[in-house]
Length: 234
Image (cartoon, rainbow, N blue to C red; front, side, top):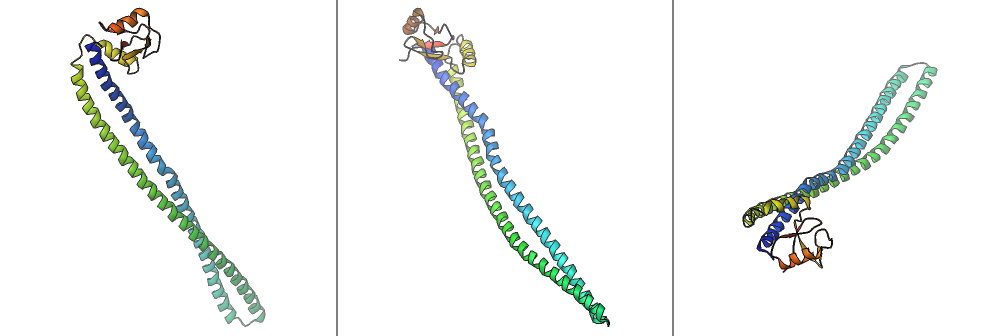
């Protein structure tokens, strides 16, 4: 194998590593966004449970007010009943008192039912808040893990970039433009091995003269189809 090709292979290894790191780093914001979306369902559940509690409390408050109003009315009617001297008016007031007392009984029954319902809504609300808190903890752990991955990858990228800069100096300057062009156009694979007379990059069969040139390794040889630099593994 030509020394130039060997140097390019090492350089390509570092460049491919940099490409992989860049791709992984680009995914991290998406991973962070996905982690944060886990909270959406729990937030909705908490909001719905909270709204249900508020609605039930409001309905209970209305019943209490209605019952209170009727208690006040009953007291007023009893005073009127006590003050009246007419039997007919007395009986009419008594009838009204009985009617209002029945309404109060019904309202108080509904209050008890609503109180039980409210207890259930509050339990659901507490459970939703606990689930949200658990999810928040998981998300915090996920984000911390992503942050650690970012830190590791950025550190590794800096190290590889420094190493890559030193390796590039060991490659003849005349070859570098071709190498860089191939790296851009050939999906990060500028140099490919030859296997059984085929290019390891495009997998096309090579002509006999190309095969011989690669095997003799006297000069840089390229695939006549894809243009990649070819070599035979030692």
